[in-house]
Image 1 (cartoon, rainbow over the protein chains, first blue to last red):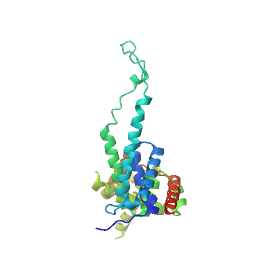
Image 2: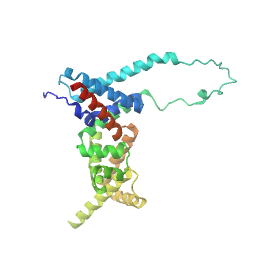
Image 3: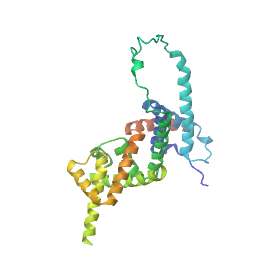
Image 4: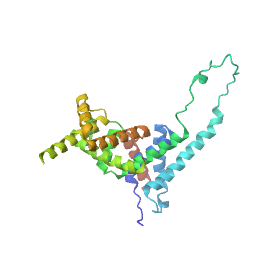
Length: 184
Length: 87
């Protein structure tokens, strides 16, 4: 079994998107997710000498990130009780429907199961993205996930439009077959 | 042989339009041509279906990634931290 090496200079290029997606599907807040990812990298840096090389770098970083996410929820949970607003309103039939809260539909369509599935789906997509060549992955991410328009990507990466579409086509074919195997 | 080449070219074009339409960049005429092509070409039909499925899944999953600027800021911070640790 190969011993895994650690190199923090490459972390951002290799793992930031994966870690970010992992976090955002669990905390639902961009800025917070960014902070947590950054904290993870810092913590990883600090405890680099504890890295035994048994797992891959990514697995190791994810295990740190998991702790960070849990810690975050612990923290906000302990604050919750203090900020609770208690309202008393008697619920007789005459006034029912007066409160805005009573008129809001229950969120039937968003169950815990959906959220869980979404998290797993995000992980599956990223593990498929990992299998793409680097250039294809970059272009595909920019075009599909970030939704940048063709012209901007072409200018940034210095490629022609037809070149871009060929890359996209290859990436899509690979992604589709990979997702077919892993997900559908 | 010649017809085979022609078919190949047509499929290539159809796939290209199919890719474009996943990002809403195909024109109406292109889409119409694609539909006609899909009527008789089962290989492209398969590709088209898979392609649509992939788009739908990606949309459903709401995957997100960091923007370039955010990454650069993060990189800067991390580099500082690495530097600090070495000294």
